[in-house]
Amino acid sequence: MLEGKKVVLAYSGGLDTSVCLKWFEQQGAEPYALYLDLGQGEPAEDVRAKALKIGAADAYVRDARAEFAYKYVAPAIKANALYGGKYPLFTALGRPLIAKKLVEVARDVGATHIAHGSTGKGNDQVRFDVTAASIAPDLTVIAPVRDWNMSRPEEMAYAEDHGVPVPTTKSSPYSVDANLFGRSIEAGPLEDPDHEAPEDIYELTTTPEKAPDEPGYVTLGFEEGLAMSLDGEELSLVELIAELNRIAGAHGVGRVDMIEDRLVGIKSREIYECPAALTMLQAHRELETMTLTKDVLRFKAAVEQRYAELTYDGLWFTPLKAALDAFIAETQKTVTGTVRLKLYKGYSTVAGRTAPQTLYSQELATYDPNSTFDESAAAGFIALWGLPARQWAGVNSGVEHKSSTAAK
Figure 1: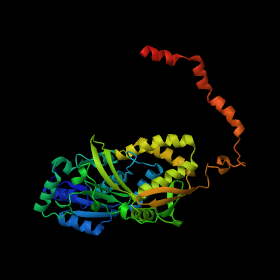
Figure 2: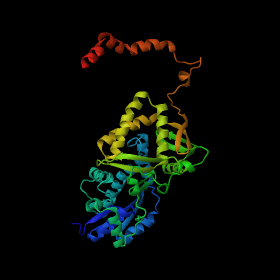
Figure 3: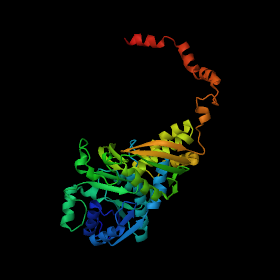
């Protein structure tokens, strides 16, 4: 079926996609590998050399860190996007960008197929397939790992039999995915939700017990919802995320261990390391409490949840997502200021915040005699505010008592 077909594979250099590359070659296809650098830390040229050695007709390496940071991470921060209230969506945010780049390379080489290494149990298969359908419905998407249904031990055996070099071993069965915004670890003993995650799985965060005994402080500066500076120094978003990962991670901040509801209907145990993501989101939310009105904050909370769900579910390039982006962009026009965070033994707490367009007024909030709040207006306000409640009680006095008696 694939004989002579050009296929562009999203290649990570890991077990799944390395086996896929060899499998395509054996099927008679002409496979091309695309490695997208999203800040995962692996030397790109090493990955390219590995792809060519395995059998790729050509291997493309693209540095997409800045595009990822500004076009995908930044909007998610402005949306305070956390799936399940915990997961900052770093993997989910990378998938629509990878799919977009797969389509671009497919157009360049004249491929009719694009491919990814997702399994049939995960969320990424949906993200890749739906994104491709949204922007290039004429291309055929292939997911060999999903179709051949090999277990990880079987994949490792296949790799060994066919001389495919992969980092995963029987003694280290974890599946790891990383980019500049975070790192996920799953599989192996982590599949038991009652099994405490061992310390050797973590790379970005120090165990809180070994974190510094003195707290650390960081100050994040935002302009219209976009993080622009760290401790007063202006940095690119890529640089800022990397530095904040280092600082917050050293204090043990950024670990997430959660039971997650996958899109495919199952619950999974997920371990995440995301120091910069969690601290940036915390600071951004805090700044919004200073600069947005109560009704906007309450309405935006519902938008944020839906935004996170759309991102998680692979619906990044959809009309609803575009509409929510427009709403969020409007809310960010006044979200400018600084937030100071205290980092200590795995915890991050807000230590201070300032904003040039703050809605907080100390003159109104203070209990000092010089307060500008007119307390004499409170009685009339309360009378009008409570009028519907008094009206209901007067007309329906005894209704609750009668209902309770009837129920008995």
